[in-house]
Length: 401
Ligand code: ADP
Ligand code: ASP
Ligand code: MG
Image (cartoon, rainbow, N blue to C red):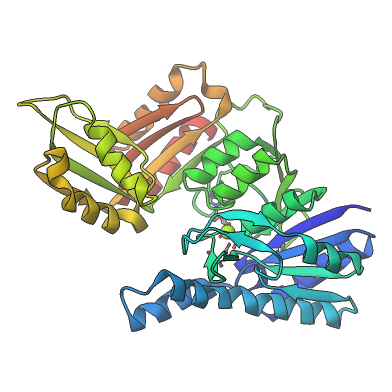
């Protein structure tokens, strides 16, 4: 008998029929003699709708009240799924994040899991019933509710799989697995039977929303066997693991991230320590910086440009303006109409042609590159947002067409 964690995203539980569909998948797995812990997201667009409701009231809600609100979405789906399981004759119990033992830090909306107290989970599983846990949420030391950031239910599922030493963590979604690009945008995208943790981590971090990047990080750290598959059919999905068959494919995928803004601090003093001062200021507020470009010095000054998540842009610009004198900068500029497009593949390390093939595809489509960043397994470019979809199609065609 195995212990299986199954996670179902918002579209998989969007309405009555979908909930019964999920209940049947879960019931079948349990009836085959497995212990099953299920993690669910809020139904359909519920989380977006809740965010919109808050915006009707205030433009500056406190993190605590936002999390109090957002946790409600997942509370609805866990209870409905348990009722559906009951209708199918299965014994099931729903648990909110805090009941399932999710202890997080206090950073509302991007809380990190500190630990999972598994006592309650173990106790409920031992009663030979299905346990349904609300994804995306936890509780911090001061007993306030927290959420893990958008797409965080994937992380909840992997964290439970790691803490409970599950045999496999299955992420059910609305596509059949991980593809070489978003199959909704690129019709020719191919389903990957296998992908390595490192490649998946890059794809997820670079915008392939099919898996949340922190879930992949956790899966790699605790070596959780991860599988991505469709809740709508029984087709084989994608296995994410330490070593995957290369299948002769150097490039594994193309990803697009439109949740990105570029910021430039102009006229920074051309003296040691300035980059440290700028980026430590942002790091203190947990603002992640990605592509970085420093212009060559002139007149004793430099310009420092970088990208952040759009959701962090306002805070970053406010902080930089406030501390401008510390770097001797003259002004801060930003642009929200940008996108990051990337190619990912562990096989590209030793191939000099990857960059030139990518840039050629962009050139042929008259797409201008603003910033470039490379690592052993990816190349990213920052371009205008309006060009992003064309860029993904062109780059996918060049490598995987
Ligand atoms: P869920 O609600 O199940 O968590 P998400 O919407 O978060 O689902 O993620 C699934 C979506 O991710 C798919 O519908 C697809 O459009 C998108 N996606 C982006 N890149 C990829 C990719 N490389 N492979 C598969 N899906 C992708
Ligand atoms: N409901 C949350 C969101 O929409 C968490 C998730 O779906 O994983 O971001
Ligand atoms: Mg998701």
